[in-house]
Image (cartoon, rainbow, N blue to C red; front, side, top):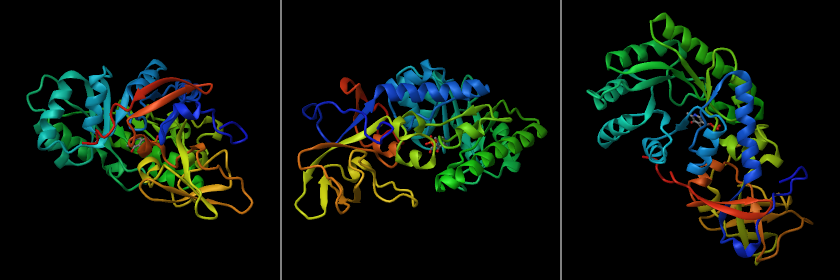
Length: 370
Ligand SMILES: Cc1ncc(COP(=O)(O)O)c(C=O)c1O
């Protein structure tokens, strides 16, 4: 979309087998450079979350633009990126390394510079057992809760987990937090960023007081990155910033003309009055919708047309009275609400520059959620 809300140019319709994902390379590169430049200016490391794109081609560009390494959400994602030669990986998740995961963790640790999240003494013991006898200690970051109340201990209790990690033979290198409560709405972003920074500073004091290291104080979300990259924070882990999406526009973390990925979809029916139907249902757009946004995405070229209902292969779009609607057969761009689950639904990203198809990148870590 440009400043008027129009989408970036798609390739000719006969080059698109819809539904499919189209990435604008100029916008992607500008987004990567923007975040890298912002954080470099603050002296804060960038470790982008690769779960957004799951793509080696995008990760390589992030690393070339100065990222210190990658963040991932699962061992499977870590394996996929390690296979491609990205070997500095943080699993920002309280990994429970039991069963088959123990051997996988051990094998990965032998071939990559790996750190993982931990938020309990019990998980630390399981991690320690998984890597016992390995040539080098596994590095861990204690997860602290900055206000999302999902995982992580209260920041003041970081040392309790760190003590247990030390007893389990793990190397504590710091703490991490994710201020996901920023997603509750545009009015929550600033306070969530401040919560994130403060939580890490409290964790740092607790760790240092107890004689642990706190080299890494890792904050991470796209909406909070610009504000929480301050004080004691050493690292940021934004992911969605690479592509942007409708939710990020609503939160104020990117402009419409910075959104770099759309779902291309074909109008397949206009049989019922007052609506058109696209071939992009929940299997293309996902069901993700924040409570403060109406609809399952937006059609920038048709502001009066809203994807109001999804079934698996259909997006039923309501057409506002008097609004222009695309006719059957037209290929339209849909900006998804949340790009991360959308990418996980596709095998490839079609890459365009100035409306010309220039590449197709595999979604290498698609489905590697285990
Ligand atoms: C632990 C963690 N770190 C970083 C991120 C990246 O945040 P965002 O998607 O806002 O870029 C996420 C996203 O869910 C996350 O869960």
